[in-house]
Image 1 (cartoon, helix red, strand yellow):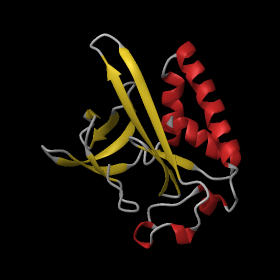
Image 2: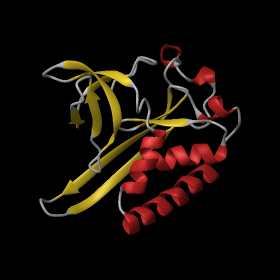
Image 3: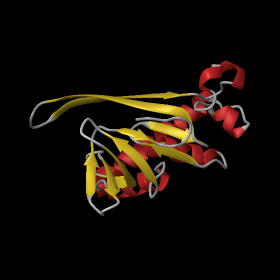
Image 4: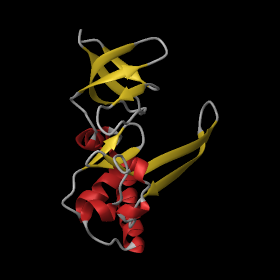
Length: 174
């Protein structure tokens, strides 16, 4: 879903969207969209997955609360253009269907490459905090299960399923 949103923005603007792990779409370090999922599964099969996408599309600057303007925006603010909601939804659904078909046919590798291409701060150092410790690490990508992969200064790699990431821009934490 995140790669679909990033591709939709890239196809319709000159902007450079980025995916902030695990579920946000940023433009110029500001959140324009968030993704939530809900899943019902048994131990051997998935019953269903519900995907929710919230996107700031045509909000103007004065419609974004003053206290979050440094970290939130809209497609209209960032692109300088009004967005047709119906066309935007159709574009997202078309890209989602194509991406899903590609995933079914070819597996996760292409989605992973696209995610990492759009990945916020991939290849950069951040501070990571968990219940056990806090450390500096370079973000190196994602895993097929959605975990964030990071490498510490000693070269040790770790899969992160839950952590507070100090992104360094706009006061973001995940």
